[in-house]
Amino acid sequence: MENRVELNRNLAQMLKGGVIMDVTTPEQAKIAEAAGACAVMALERIPADIRAAGGVSRMSDPKMIKGIQDAVSIPVMAKCRIGHFVEAQILEAIEIDYIDESEVLSPADDVYHIDKRKFKVPFVCGAKDLGEALRRINEGATMIRTKGEPGTGDVIQAVRHMRMMQSEIRRLVSMSEDELYEAAKQLRVPYDLVDFVHKNGKLPVVNFAAGGVATPADAALMMQLGAEGVFVGSGIFKSGDPVKRAQAIVKAVTNYNNPKVIAELSEDLGEAMVGINESEIELLMAERGK
Amino acid sequence: MIIAILALQGAFAEHQQMLHKLGTDSVLIRNLPDWQDFIGRDEPKGLIIPGGESTAMKRIMRDENLVEPIRSAIAGGLPTFGTCAGMILLSKKIEGSDAESFLGDAAMDVVVRRNAYGRQLGSFYTEDSFGDDSSAEEKVPMTFIRAPFIVEVGDSVKVLAKVDGNIVAVRQGNLLATSFHPELNDDVRVHKFFLSMI
Image (tube, rainbow over all chains, first blue to last red; front, top):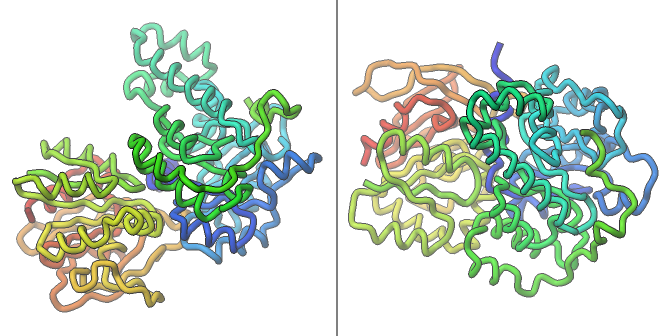
């Protein structure tokens, strides 16, 4: 039996230093690919519109996803609801490259996440802190992203989640070995995962930022805080000049430590997505699925 | 000796770790000034183009004005190693595409098939022989992630590895390319092979 978990972690490694963009049509997917996206997330409605529309939001129409798979050569991801393993089976059946078991959609199960080890295709999951991240990894996720607060254009929650994960990682690294058992208990995760973080100072899988990234500066901020790449959802195609903004965010992720480059990239981008403040919204998607 | 690793997108950190294991210095190239610093150094040099998404790397290379400087260095004999996406970038032609290689005459005389094993479900791990006539037949770990393989080679191209009859590693003069990712396993033999070309 070949090691799917390892191969699926490896694909996430290839996405590092890149930008994964939400797209709703084959045309948008081509724009994203030409702008330098390392993957696209195919979905019927971007988070800002899901938020505006309200109601139950579900996996996208497989036909729509296939249209996007045919349009580009880069990896194509798609979202299923938390706990909805049949939606995940459908996405596996159409050979999606990565499944996002996502809090952006309405959860299908308020207790259990999908047993991701049962699948051959890889899963990325959102997390607000180290405990959530390691629980998802234990369930078989081979890539983690911050939850942030999708569809807001407000980066505060992504920052909070990334800072939380990084500070908890540093805490584990500094512990003595006999303290790790108690840490595992508190985090509600297996000892082996805690031990890995203690020894390596990072998650055993790639960790991206997501949820509220709208500008090249936002993307670079997340990279400097320790993200290994960035998901941009509503921020691109809800802005005034999607092509230019997409290219600028791609370059900002590559040169995240170079303020001079980011300054140039930030010029004349047109209007950013309007955005909503965290305090103005009623539905906190990040509270879904812990 | 100093090795530049193109660090625009993808698994560049893994290559850096491999070189570190071999006690070889490396620098990450994110933009033109990084490249100019590297080229200005007075010591033997090599270049690694890592795995990732070749379309993303090409886009950033163009925007950062890195295409011509890298092309002329490779044409001038700079030893260069491409893995996966890096193999695609070093190839003369992508099957089914009319686009000219950005390397022009300096490109490897091969035709490459992108995503030759299909989507992520087609990714796999195996161990197979790698090497030229000078080395013994040794099996090395090979991780293929949405990998390409080579469908045509010119006369001056030496095939270094085949898996199931498909060409997955080649050398032509100063250029080395693999479909698989030696940087993802602990085995340093393929990187050693590259360093021996410098």
